[in-house]
Image 1 (cartoon, rainbow, N blue to C red):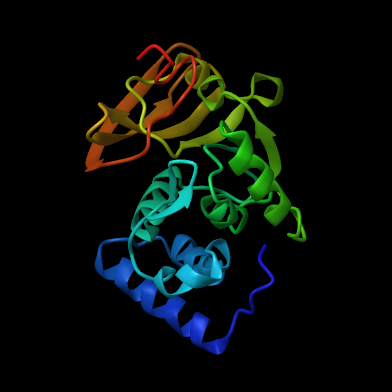
Image 2 (cartoon, rainbow, N blue to C red):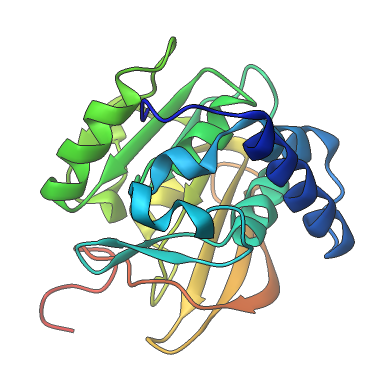
Length: 221
C-alpha cells in the first residue's frame, strides 16, 4: 500500500461514498463495510488523489483503469463471498478490488496479464499484513494449479464465457464476468450447479477494458 496517510478527512469521504453506493442499490452490509475500509486514495498518484472518492473509473496507466467504486461493489455483491471462500480475481490492475475482496476472505488469488502493472501492484500489496497470492500471466486461463475456487471474479470484458474458468469453479461456486463486445458488456453471473450443469443470469450493462488472453480477446481479435 501507499505510505500516504489515511486521515479523518479520507475516512469521511469514504463514508460519503458508501452512502452514495447505498443509494445506487448496493445492499450487502459486508461489501459496503469493505468499501468503507479500503483507502482508495492510496491507489492513486498524489496529484490525482482528489478524484479517489468520486464514483468513477480512473486511468492507472498501461491502458487500464481503477474501476468505478459502484462497479467494484456491484461485482463483489454478486459473488456473495463467505469468510472461508477461495476467490480467484482475473485482472489485478491497481489492486483496489483485490483489497476489497481481502476484507471478505483471506483466501484471495489474483492474476494480472500486464507485467508492468503486476510488478507495481505486487510491490504495493506486499505491504499488507496478509497479502493475496499474486500471479502474472494469462488470466483467461485461470490458475488450474490452485483450483477449484468457490468464487471467480473477472474485472475485464470477455467475448464469451471462458471455459477454463468454468472448469475451475467448485460445484456450487459462482463466476461473475462482463460478457459482450468491445463497446459494452452485460454482467453475467454463472453458478456451477453440478459437474456438467451451469446456470446463467444476465444483469446490467457495463463497459470494461478487454480481457486479453487465449480464452478472451486473443492477439488476433
